[in-house]
Amino acid sequence: MSKIVVVADARSGRIKKPTLEAVGAAVDLAAKCNGSVVAFVAGADNAPAVADLQKSGAAQVVSLRSPALASYSGDGYAKVIHAELGKHAPSVVLMPHTAMGRDLAPRIAALLDAGMVSDATALHFEGGRFGATKPVYAGKAYRKYLARRAPFVATLRPNVFEIRSGGGATTTEVAASIGAGELLAVVKELAQGSTDRVPLQEARVIVAAGRGMRGPEHFGLIEDLTAAFGPGVGAIGASRAIVDAGWRPHREQVGQTGKVVSPQLYFAIGISGAIQHLAGMRTARCIVAINKDANAPIFKVAHYGIVGDAFEVLPALTAAIKAAVAH
Amino acid sequence: MEIIVCVKRVPATDSKVKIAADGRGLDPAGVEFLMNPYDEYAMEQAIQLREKAGAGTITVVSLGGADAQKELRQCLAMGADKAVLLDDGGKPNDGCSTARIVAAWLKTVPHELVLCGRQAVDNDEGQFPSRLATLLGFACATEVVALTLDGKVFRAERDIEGGREVVACPLPAVISCNKGLNEPRSPSLKGIMAAKKKPLDTVAATAVEPALEFVSLMLPPEKPPGRIVGSVQELVAALRNEAKVI
Image 1 (cartoon, one colour):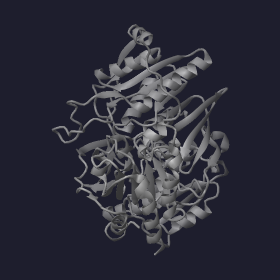
Image 2: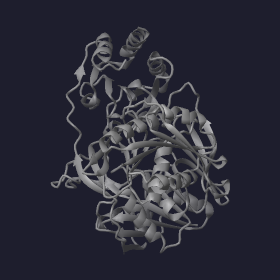
Image 3: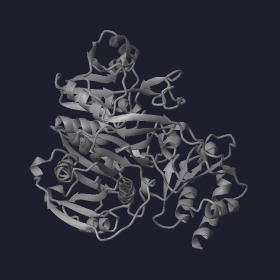
Image 4: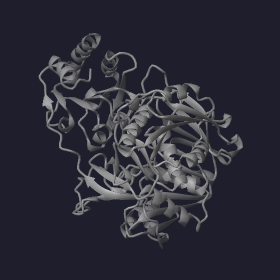
């Protein structure tokens, strides 16, 4: 029987959506290969994360604990996770494609000498082999890979895979044998942004804006529309042009040299839709473009479009969204 | 300090993708290739570290075919001291084989710091830096947007979801560079002239088979054309009733 291990990103102490989606993807893959799903979490105190993972659909939760793991250390985490993987001999190891997953999964893959696919949007089990498909060349193409040997490692793009739920997972507590003196690179400080702001990659709705907003002083209109969806739902995105112009911070940039996002609903307001921008958002479930120029390339990827001036459309749209969300 | 900068030759991001006849790779006809944009941040960081220390050697390395000499020359023109082409004829590699080939070559040269871009914009994998660090047993910080060296320990900042973390990363180290770290310089005319006389060696790459099979390359499914709506009310109704996203 194949074992699929999902390594949780529990940096905030809790399990967030991208990890739950990875467990969901593992449950679906396990159904195809008659496998079972084990969720790993590493840290100093994993109790809240374990409670979240017990309901995630995994059959077993493994909690790797050590005081040395209180702060994230890529090499330290990889070491204890790799040691534990030896007991499970998994066919597949999955992580969410989060800041932690992007850093940690390749280290685990290197220790396993395993093939890995980053930012996967589909998982495969064909003829006894595992693999994945992912966007390449800025989302202009998809490549399908199959592993030549086991195990196979992948990180999964957030907001693509379905969350499954379950109960009755067994929990195994493991005292990880690692001392603080063995760690190489360690996180020393963590500056969290304000908690009422949703991280861009986790937002269900993104309101992204570009040059069409004419200047940073007009972003109240963008903030109003973002807020209209209610607290904890929306985040503001930005095109590369306005980040380079200093209107908005780089952390808001969507696109090839910014963040890759896949929200349920993406507004592109006054964004022409350069290929570099499309690379960051074309897998959003629903794309709405608002642009004065009816020939703007953004309309080619948009599901819905309004040809018009953002300054006229936005106040009415904000009011209509507020009314719709209230019902 | 002996600094190694890893660079990759990639298709320009605005190039059109055509699938090769075998259905597995990119048809390179008519595609402009250039240095991976993130690698420019790595190259710039290497120069700044050398300037600050007032000493050190920068060796730039690329795994690929003979055509990657163009990108290596560009790095020499920016300020690298020497260049090495790890020649594998331009075969497709995955993260596993790339890291193992470069790690094998690093055994033959002095190195204390390896700088890379956060990911190459062809396959967008981003595996190479932390895989390489793991194989070397080096400390590693990835996707770094601010970097300072205090004695033998880097203070590296990286953006995470909803915040920023500071990593203490001691030498020897692998650092992967993100946009925001610096403003890469353009090669000066003097630099371009000097680059012609700098050493560019070709070394046969160690043969390592990829752990993945490249099964197929596909264009995204055709999306039905979107709909231009006439009013905000029509849009909100469509988002609610058709797309079911609000």
